[in-house]
Image (tube, rainbow, N blue to C red):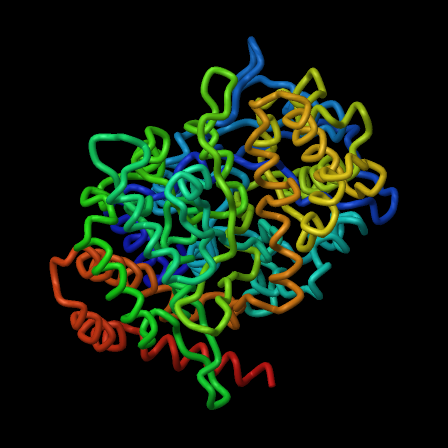
Length: 554
């Protein structure tokens, strides 16, 4: 450690690590490696003549199914990296995905890092101040291929800027397409059975929720209106969350938005949030929300969807992959679902909140002997994920090099995605017309093939059709894009000093009071007390720092 400040940071991190378990669930990784990209130019992946070894840590995801005889210790993906670029990958440890982030916190706090690992923005700042990770500026410039450099700056370099601290590149952004929207998924067979219209407004949504509760078309012991899990406002809750519900009330979860006076304000403390919480409390009072939601993770909450107790849920485009567990039984589709844009509480369109397309960063320990090996992994991933040769398909599918649902792409220890895609314009049209000639990317070809399997009778691919098909989630994206019905976080700098120190505490306090309000344990007026406390606990200082950053851009 270089200073008492660094020691204090590590001590705080360890304390936070012991405070509870991660809310992320395994279903959040249930999507294609996707984010595919056509080749920019043919480039090499690095000099692989001399074998080097790099260590990392890996989450064990239930959607990753190993081929017989393979494991995290030995598998065809790791073998391919050794063969193709001369980099041997070892895992310092492997943890269940539900515990992975806590293990990362503990590793940071105990200064027991592998050569490289994924961290969040606050940890990136902490590790930099503690002088535990490398400045990658020169290493990246020397070893990253031209394709890699172009790939990671397709957005003009905004995502890369988030990894810069004091002018130094301290991490590699784990980039993805920020235009990933949330939708409302509804049991359309129940709508038909009860003679209900498709949801176009929030009033429609509430009436459907009440009808599903009262009529109980699933015939279960008890029915509810909407599926909710214990971390409903977190970005990581890709299904069974309530961020989309907030957006329908023009409220947004922890983003920085224009205040109308040339500055930025935090969305968590705006009046619209109070209105949304009041509506959720009313739903809870009416029995439309499972009274035990606050202790259920996504998978546990989803069980009520599978058994027919709930027929509506908000979620990301990949939500059908979760719904499939209840929708497809013994080779038959037993639940019919439709996907709809988030309804609005008034005549103003709902703005789908989106981030910057980067929440994590790959950092390299100062103790790493071969940091160039990490950049080689990055180069190879971009090539293999976006324009693979037949042999390179091993990185996505394993030794058989064919799609068989084992999600071998999850074995790649360093993954970055494309910052833009046109899946919504291409896939629904291609699938409806059975025209693969218009497909452009590896991701589109994979999704098209899966959807066609469903069209031809393979119900196991039902979920892909509801994502990519003519009326699937992707089909709504072009309209959202065209009308700019989204709101993007305006702050994209590295965490401010107070943000790094206090944001986790503020978020924990927010979640605590919001859950109490929803569950009618306290009055909705407690929101006003929360706002005052938020400001005193560091919110005002963070707002000041964010606005100083914002002014520096002008």
